[in-house]
Image (cartoon, rainbow, N blue to C red):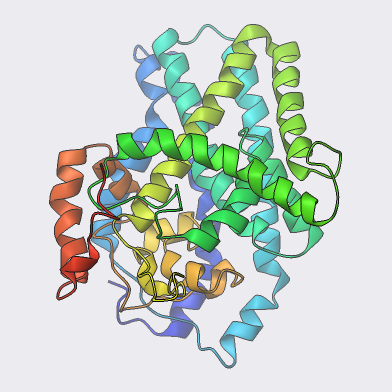
Length: 378
């Protein structure tokens, strides 16, 4: 539907369309409103995940891809210089923190749902905090201005994953698509084999990287100079605040939505690099990261919701580029649907492998030896 639209036309559409991130946020209070007086209140609590993982993949397929890229010489500098796009991401911080707090208050102060509905409510908030909150945090922690760094860190602290701020930039982007990267899924590795290692390694590696940074400066790892201590202390304050305000239920809600958000992030990591790898050179080092080392997904709707996160190939090749100027690379490996649909697929390993393994093999056609034991899952 949008494949043949001009770059100018698509840029105008996207400029307004990036505000679509508010729609999943709005689905949370909408689900609460619809549950009022309903005989199926528990079911309404699951409205958001049903829409995101049931309806959005269908809409992605119907609306299709939007491959137009901004023109490099004039449009890219103009877009990167516009404050509008930075304000748009920074606006997510107060809105999402407000949703998080309001969600805890609703959970603790009404008897609308059984435990099933409470689970659906917490899952819904966690999906928003993961899909929108961590996506925006990811955009912000890659940027240099202090306000963006701080906002990204706060959003990550709100889901107890402050380590992502360190590990993603200094770890994942250095080792992406190599066996050293726990966020890069190997060919044949199931999601359920990937997740436990990703949780553990990414947490520990963040501390290792921060300790190494401080050691180079002659500073101890356990000191106020360690930024992870501050981010996890902030997470602790969130937990204390929810506990004091809403009791044990508030504490459980905060921790559970954090787990959902972090799990959603790691599932996205799984699908973004599955089976792709950088070749090891004769000197023992890996080849430079290029757009061929990340799966690309150019489906318009989810790209608007996720601030072009799905143009992941360009992001890894040029990590400092802002979301509004990320480019589509036709030569990159392409996912068959947007992230929402691919997440559902990843949850079903036999179906995932039936769809994705042939794509990996086709991408390395003529170089099948690259899919060596070094990349295969144990």
